[in-house]
Length: 373
Image (cartoon, rainbow, N blue to C red; front, side, top):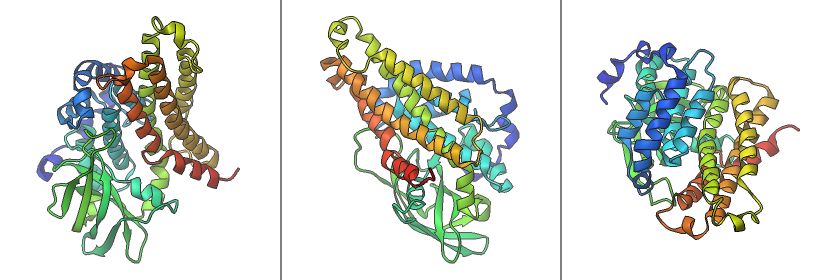
């Protein structure tokens, strides 16, 4: 999309106050079980579903967290309904919702006025390049993008190995180290000639998520695309929402894994009853997990250490239970789940992604270990 088209939209175009969350969630679910269900295998095999993302945008999927107070529960539920059918698509929805979350939390009114409405309505699609920064803040990696202050903005260069929900006309949020200053967070326009998208090696799953390596060569980032001139306080402000939104991927995936277990409660249910994990027990685990996520989603700006520990613990549990649910769905389905056409084997591959996408299981455990008791 051209910059002229982006700026033609205003925050008033969001009509956030007029969005009925219940109706929006119903429409998201309807699109998921009809159109997305038909596309799921193609997405798994590498098709980027731009048309479907725009349909989800039209339903309100990327502006459910724009209501006063910025409570995240409805946005998480929207992504969970997508993930019940396809976790790759829920991941793209998370990327888009997170891009909107960055803009919601930015104090740069110019950036907000130019890009918030466009991202929230899907006129601009995009993602988040915070995998590397999130690791860098805990000493796992160093920042891969470097910037220098120049008149009216910054010059940025570097290489990011994996950024998702991208295309030649997409945007993403990124953090770069600043020579002689604090790291800066800004929007990057993939259409800029200084930005090159490089295809990645095929993944075990997620090949349809628009994931690329990104090369940035002396890109000029103007001040009106800066989300925060000091990235660290900004990240601390919006980090709980960033992580909690990922729970939508896990919740929907686990729901479908429980559904698959129930589908085989007849034959071969007489044998499945000897397996350690049964669908009723997994449903109880999911209900408790959803209750905790929903409670945390009410106050995403709570700065207390106890709240932050609960957020990290909830995200860790989401990844662990995704793998457990998908593993047990496969055991319940047996050979019928092991064939290539089965959604059961896709769910198992997707579940591992939930457990390794940043912040991954091992990083979450590191974060908990570094917190005060």
